[in-house]
Length: 334
Image 1 (cartoon, rainbow, N blue to C red):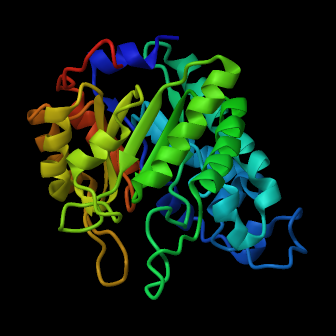
Image 2: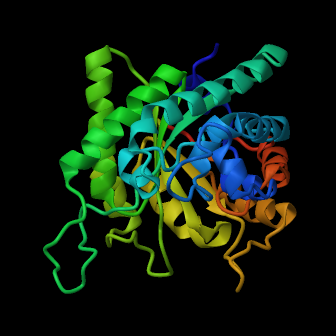
């Protein structure tokens, strides 16, 4: 199979859209989340989307299939909350390895199906490594600014366990995403480097931060350039932004990355900004038209969608970007 590093220099790669948005269509109940295995679990489980890889695996596989069929080159595993830190909300810390392993295995199986059918267009799986629900550089208590809800070492250990399971399950890429606190991301990257060294392997790493509002900064206060500098000590496949903002609002931040880095640049924005009901109204055509600006300005190498995006959005984006060349990237760093 052709290496993703080589393909990235030839064309713009397409990432999938939102897993959560698609799972909402199934209208799964508490009982569906539990399945037979967790029928007697003492705590509520509805909303634990990662668990569906164990209790509704066919639904997860179907979502991946729809995104690949829509034109995605890369799908993300259903593991956004797959750490002991995030799973503590459901008292499911002991299931973390299995959740990540099974999610990776399901996605890889579907990717292999599509690659076998279209060998000229190999499909890849990115292990989704989310930010956790804690922050290492800010206090959750306004009355105690020195307090931290989690330490760097606790994050490192949690991320290492997730990384090992994702790799064992067969992922091709590791995607540290939706980074609102760069210190959390540094713990994830440190853990990944540890695993790479211990296993004597090399695995492509994608890093994607999130600009939380019109200030143009991450939640922990960094500008796009500061974020880039903070993670550039590691050789990565791509750096970019996802979530929080719609495609239009991301442009100036992508311009900063594109001008300042030799890594690939990625973007998977939301389908616009949420309405009063927290829903996303931007159509596939509207979103593709906005992302057209990215490719016309040669800002990106990888594009996809985050909250509110569906296979229809990904199809429109894939059809649009196929006529454009990717942004030039350095052979050494990619």
